[in-house]
Each structure stands twice: as structure tokens, then as C-alpha cells.
Image (cartoon, rainbow, N blue to C red; front, side):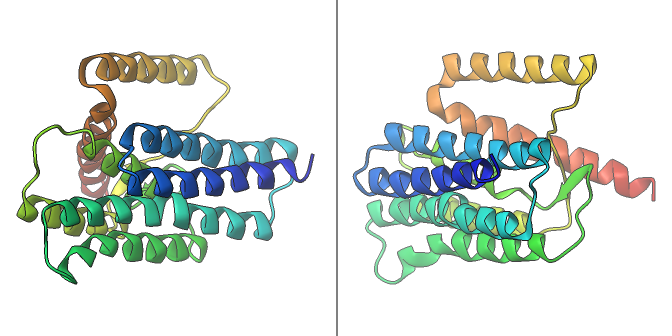
Length: 220
């Protein structure tokens, strides 16, 4: 049982590798499902470790290494491919991998600093990965300037001091109701917008977190 959380972490990393393969194959549908698997197992490994009482420094480091692949390299590859499709000259399309560098820096900072248990400081890497994989389902062409702006903006958010909601499972009726409402709203978005819904949901998450962060700062 002690190895189970680490096995879940490795599933996260494996799904991230598969996501990269399908992104390069321009199969964004399958790549999106791979990223979703990454998110689920990234949540479950930590949850299981806490429930089983087997949290460890090794598990923490393994989790971050898996996240570098799934939530660092994957969104960077998406942005780079989007720039490459626009026939951007070498080496400018590698601007997309600024996201990867920002994600690596965030994960290292997260592991070496005290984190607030109520919220995240900066945009979580799984949320950023969902935002970018969702953008692959936009049917119209995205301009170079918009892609570069999004790369810079999300890279900034990853390492910003803004407070982002930390979604946690708690043994309370209110927590269950909130979770059910979120699931229903997400299903409604998926029905209406398809996989683009992931980008829309994360955009709403960012806006709500901005409001939360500003209100928190005003009370200090």
C-alpha cells in the first residue's frame, strides 16, 4: 500500500509522455484525455498518501518530477506547436517553451517554500496545462501576438503572488455540494463548447482567484 501513491504518480508521468506523443501527432482529442488522466492521478497520489499516512520527501520530489512532464513540458509543447503552425521562423517558435521554464521554476519554488493551506500562491501547473490543451480545440487560427501574449501572461501567473483557490475534499455537506455544483457546471460547459470548455473553466478560475486575491490583500 505504501507504493500505491508513487505508482499513481508514475501513471501521471506516463500519461504526460503519451500526451506529448499525441500532440506531435496532432491528435489533440487524445492528448486532452491524457492531460485529464494526468490531473486525476496528480490529485489521487497526494490524496492517497495523506489517507494512508505515507507522505514522504521522496513522494514529494517524485510528484514534482512527474508534474514537470505533464504540466510543464506538455503546455510548452502545445504553445510551441501553435507557433510552429503559423510558420514562425526558427528559433522564435521556441518562445512557447518559456511556459516549461516557468513551470519548472514554480515547482522548485513550491517544494522549497511554506505554502498556504487555504490557497496556492500563483497559478497551479495542472490548471495551466488544462488551459493550454483546451486552446488546441479552437477552430479558428490564433494570431502570433495572442499566442506570445498568452505565453508571457501564463508564465507570469505561474510564479506570481496572486492567491488561487485550492480545491480540497472535506468531509462536510457544504464541500460535497460545492463539488457537485462544479461538476454540473463543467458538464454543461463541455456539452456547449467541447474540450474548449477546459480553457473557459480555467479562465473563470483565474478571474475568480484575482477577485479573491484582491479581497484578501485589502483585509491585510
